[in-house]
Length: 266
Image (cartoon, rainbow, N blue to C red; front, side):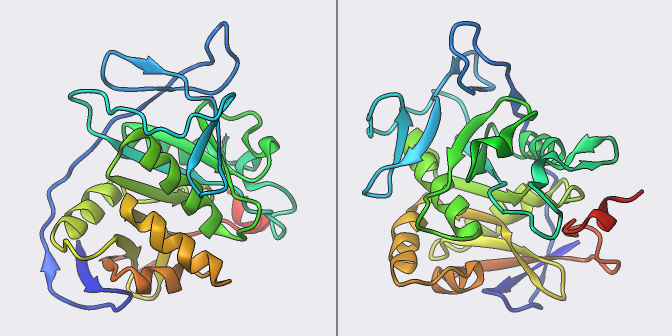
């Protein structure tokens, strides 16, 4: 059961959510173009290449400088899930996406979750090596002048704006036990509050701001926030009038982040 609270305040009335699942597929590299691509659930596939942000903070696909938004595929729910994988992983002793947990890398766990949440899947990294050995998906590069997970959210929202999706779900690469109904409950909360620009997850003890469903309109306020020198996702969510959905998690396992080699042990 999950309950809804105003921005980063626990409590509030209980909500009954139905289960809602979106299936995404990860595709292999194109034979003639080795850039990552994403296969859509509609009978169309597209290869967008690597994505970086231009000086205006909008997504730019390489090669080329086409900044125009891409048209949504007719009949396809424009849902995007971005895995945030650009952290340095200092406590882990290296990049987290390649660390093994229960016979699979953390990056593979996260991409598998993302494919169950959304039609489109992307991986946000700071260095290309952070995608090494992972299934080929759309790569987004964190803007170099923004530190922390805020950078991945920025690149994710910019890419979401480019492909024409109204919402972007972000999840961390180091939380392999996220609930199956994460997207469904966040979407339900966001749809009930037209003023809120985001809905994030919590567990009754603390919020988990990397697990957030963002409206793409949040990109402008995010850039203003970042230009002021602030980097806290919690601070940004407060400014966006965000909602928080609280999962009952008495043992603290659902949103558990794996941060050290000890956390990876069986």
